[in-house]
Length: 514
Ligand code: KIV
Ligand code: ZN
Image (cartoon, rainbow, N blue to C red; front, side):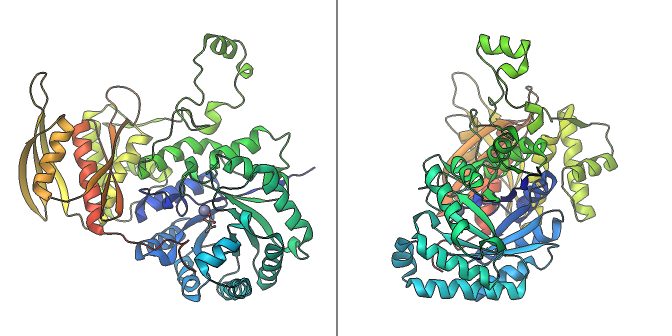
């Protein structure tokens, strides 16, 4: 018997970005969206268009760049929100407006300060307004898992009549339990008279570590869309993780009555890209995408796997994109090969100047490092693409001295507002000395919240990829830098974060207000 299709709705760029510190620039969002498109994700929630000019521009840029997936923007129920979402989605081949309002007694009384009747009225008006602008409208009952059953039936029936074609039932605070949550979905689908006119969707948060279990229970009970994020990124403890949902449905095809049309080999590369852009490392024992997910340490396991792989392996590492670390280019590769490989990675450079800059950086890297992998190119592009922003600070040079028994010291050269400046400082280590030298020139007043270094590929000639998270007056930004010299990578990441702070991105949070 043919199985139903499970719609994969990725919200890495919207709910994922609500993780404190996980902000992404427009170009970074486009790169992630292109990877999601390549993976075959059905719906990409690209942002919350009214939140800020940057969010609006990001949704628009993703809508322009992606063709294979439906692009969605979140909107509260106000007409202004919905109009802004529709405007951002105009370039999309297939666009969706996702409007929502809270339906639980606690949210209606204390957050919205609205009577249930007004909430229904607002929801219906929002869906009708959205349907006048776009054919595909999703409605979410925020905090559905703590909402009253009869109220859910009432509002859902009316928004379906108003034209909503997807009904999402978020477990907003991660309170649900699999049996209870699945039963809620089945009961609603069975008792709402026009339920057959909509697809029921779930959106689970991971506060109790149950987001994936709750989503899968809902799928067993009739949900046909799951909202999820790469690496389980998202507000607080995160959302259900895309890779776990996809691989659970695939691996237990004997149990789940659905199939997904996702190219799972894109999972690991996409996970890496999201991690490197957001600065959220993936824990080594994370299912599917953690570095140890397919590593067998114990002798008994290794012996078993060598004799017959399936003794201890339920999935194949290569099926989710491990070892897809292809040697792509080297010192002698030409501009055409370079451009073609970028294209395969979903990176398009819209002008000749950007391509020239990227190619020059690539040649510089190829001089230092024999083999250039896809991950190296991704890191290189993180550095080249921000050139579209006004950059106040840029790196010019560095000398770091670290000798056993003496205080580490750094001399740095930066270009600040077009003028070359130099500074020196001592520190507890060479990175600390370099950051102190930078601060002696910029006096940013920012607090360093996170500093992390990872090797992009294997081997001691790998580039070091550094993430620096800075906070200033409540604004949190992540800077990235990559270089074969990790002190240089660190300073580049620090300057990237300072430039982002200068850009001063302030945005509204969707779950505040209506
Ligand atoms: O968690 C939630 O309720 C949400 C909605 C806006 C869908 O993110
Ligand atoms: Zn959410």
